[in-house]
Structures are given as C-alpha cells and as structure tokens.
Length: 208
Ligand code: C5P
Image 1 (tube, rainbow, N blue to C red):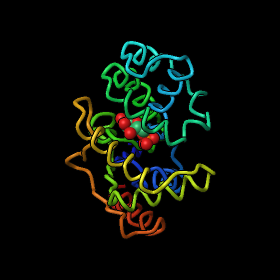
Image 2: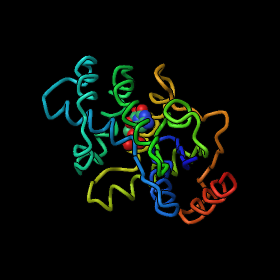
Image 3: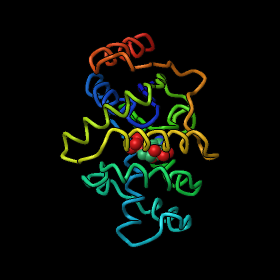
Image 4: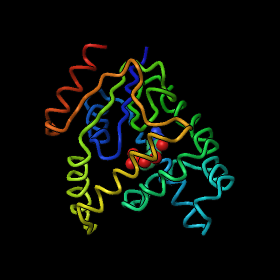
C-alpha cells in the first residue's frame, strides 16, 4: 500500500515545512493544499470578481490548473486571508476534492498538508499528523518568514491575522479545521524545526 501522509494544522504551525521535509526524506510527492485555495482567491481578484461571489468561486476552483500554483504572489500575507474566505464555500471545496484525491491516489504515495486532509481528503491515510503551536509562536515564525521575503508587517498584525483565521477555519461548517480522531498530535511550540522533523519521522517510521 502506498504511503500517504496527511498533515493538518492551523496557519503557520510549521506543517508546510514539515510536509516538505518528510516528502523529501521518504521520496514522496508533496501537495501544499493551501495553495489551491490561495490560487482560487488570486484568480478571482485578478479577474476583478468579489470574493463573496460563491458561484464564481466554485467555477474558478473547477477551472484551476497546476501551473497556477507557481505564482509567487500566492505566498503573500493578504492571500492567506483571501484564501480563508473562499475556502468556506462548499462548492469550492467540492471542486478541489477530486484534485487532491487524485494527487494522493498515485502509486508513489504522497504527503499532503492542509486543514482537512486527515478528516475529509484522505481519511484512510497511513499516517495522520496534527501540528499545533501557540498563536504567539506561530505569529513569530510567520513574521520571520515574511521579513525574509521582504514583506514588512508588524508582529501584532500577524497575530491578529492568525487569530482571525483560526476562528474562521475552525468554525466554518464545511470541513472545519480539526484533528482526525486517529491523528497523532504534535505541539511544536517548544520545538525547533529539527526537533519537529525528528518527532514526525518517528511517527511515520512506527506506522510503516
Ligand atoms: O495553509 P495556508 O495558510 O496556505 O491556507 C490558506 C487558507 O486556505 C487557510 O486559512 C484555510 O482557510 C484554507 N485551507 C483549507 N483547507 C486546506 C488548506 C487550506 O480550507 N486543506
């Protein structure tokens, strides 16, 4: 059975870095599923369509192609917020579901990270990790990351963003952010990237 690793967690929990490193370590393809929602939002903004237009959001999600996931603007802070808005539209989630399942269903196995991978997209994944960290620590990490890319923001603004996104992602009715019952929880507040990677590897190796 191909090895599928599902990684979920809130914004800036470190799940993306972890997913990338695990994919590299186990030789698996990796999909950052947040990029799909970010791309839907970006395509709508570029087309001058309101993010509140749920029909357009679902249609845009249905037309998404892989090339559109490479746009560097997808990583900007404002796009995380915009993605969070379109991601609560059930039609958007439905359109992106088969995309993600196809990616996860390849013979090589896969690593996917997002909010609902263990609960909705890959309920049968061999390994499920739920990554958390305190909002303050996540804000510090995101601040460092954005500063490294030359995007100027204050720590307070990022913390406010993170709290708003946590609230929206956890309270929506369509596939809310929550740990699958069989997920292993990993709190990385006190761990550096190396320690988090080692802890995650130990979980995967136990399940292989
Ligand atoms: O992970 P990232 O910050 O790029 O995700 C952006 C937004 O996309 C999240 O705040 C969330 O609302 C949404 N998302 C989602 N389901 C996923 C991945 C991301 O709803 N699997």
